[in-house]
Length: 216
Image 1 (cartoon, rainbow, N blue to C red):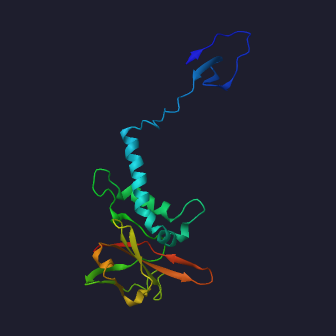
Image 2: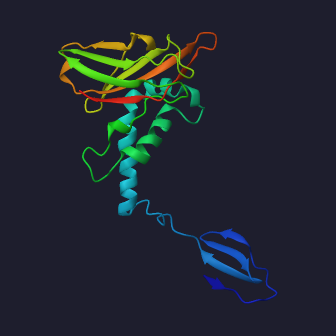
Image 3: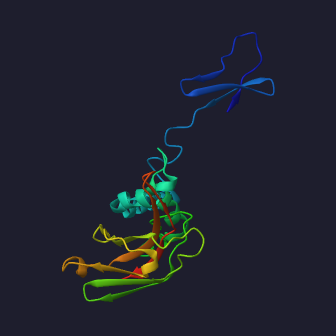
């Protein structure tokens, strides 16, 4: 930064080439503009590399279930913020550790978010190629209704595959079952459960926060 002497010569203000002219304490000051690499775009710091890796890792983790996340976060979607953005926030703040392998903990993934009452005391067991999920009937509490339907996702990030259970079970049944084929049964799945309350006239659903049931 340099200070130019006061004179009757007209001095510019603003940007000219790589120089910036401005007034400071009644004097005209000139400084050079930062180089394009001042943010280490081409020579990132170790911390920047960690942040880049985090961004890429979480996005790659969420991308296969993008459609399911849009459904699960439908109450909060805008043109600029989709389901992946909401799920990213949860993983970013709670479920990512760059010193761990794998760096992402799927237990912190939310596949849905909402004000509907969630599952109470859910349990999961595996019998052969079948997953059985149970929960306590809490359909008389809060906004819950006996006819609330399940929203179940099984996700295998290593294979980038997921199962979106097409069959819906009601809250008051306290039971859901997932039949897997011989190939699906060879994968390890992270399983998530939520409830939804569908409003046909609006074409939308009220959902609960999802619950992570574990890995099988």
